[in-house]
Length: 256
Picture 1 (spheres, rainbow, N blue to C red):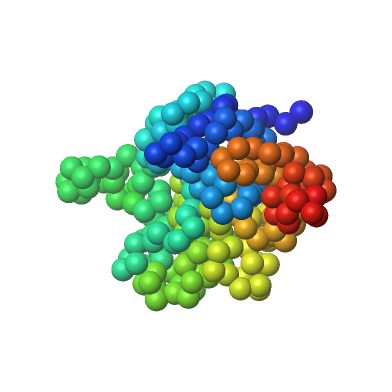
Picture 2 (cartoon, rainbow, N blue to C red):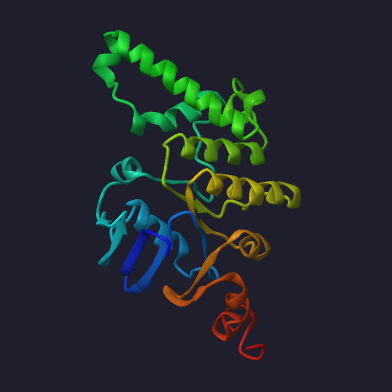
């Protein structure tokens, strides 16, 4: 039986009386790729924000590694081992690719402003270790040739990979991927599916919000379906494709 890495229990969040997420309960097994799907406005990104600490739920709990993390700030959630990417890339555009990835290591370093200003020997050792780790991740993602390029000069698909690299630099146990295929062409999406599997194979569990159904069905071990903030289905991809409520939401009543 797989260990449960992440669990949401009755999560709810409203905005001005509109239930963006309503009583959502599901779990993510360690070592799995789990997808969250649903039409626009279903509450998928709000759910991610509740897990990552960007939003605080009005009701319910987020449990990670068996301990409640509800209400923790995003940096604290990241420090516990949850990293995320975003629908639109959020890189430091005028930093190099290497510098962007090194920034992702801040949750795993001890040096602060004062110790950095004092140029203490251990801070330089830590800096070298951080750079080595960042270079190793860039190498694994095929980005070594872009190490010293300014991030904003890269094509969009490569910028997306740099964001992946920065998230992996935090050494997460769980990686939240918010619409990772958005803006990618067919070839880049195929590369993405291979990359997500590779990440999972290194021991990182993945929770993916995605609209590209071919990608979802190709990579996912399990799928959760949201509609109007509520969970309407959960299970393996083949079962989700046949689920009458999912068919109704995506294709209409006559098809269901």
